[in-house]
Image (cartoon, rainbow, N blue to C red; front, side):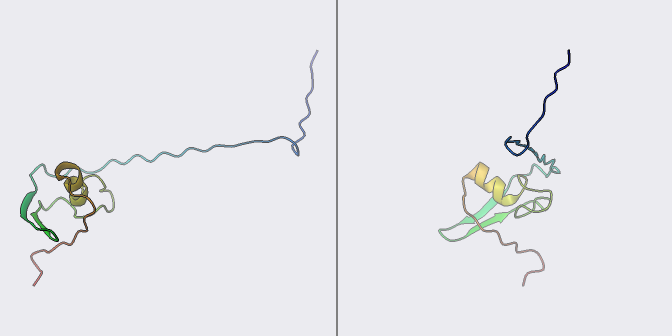
Amino acid sequence: MREEYTLDWSQSKVFLVIVCECFRHELPVTAEPIEILADTSDLLVVNKPSTIPVHPCGRYRFNSLLYILAKEKGFRSLRGKLLGTFTT
């Protein structure tokens, strides 16, 4: 014997949960140490390797200079400014 069910959609509650996960596979950077040249109350000067970006961008989040300084050296709430060889 087959039972038939009817659904009254006006009184039922149907929930749909969609879960999206994002996995980041970052490119490796060099393992050279970041050299701190000067550390004053309002200025931090470092000599960074060329393969490390200053701030999180593109495919780099954890392998950026600001993140590495926060995790390894304890410098929090830094703002980065890059002064390169073309800066006068």
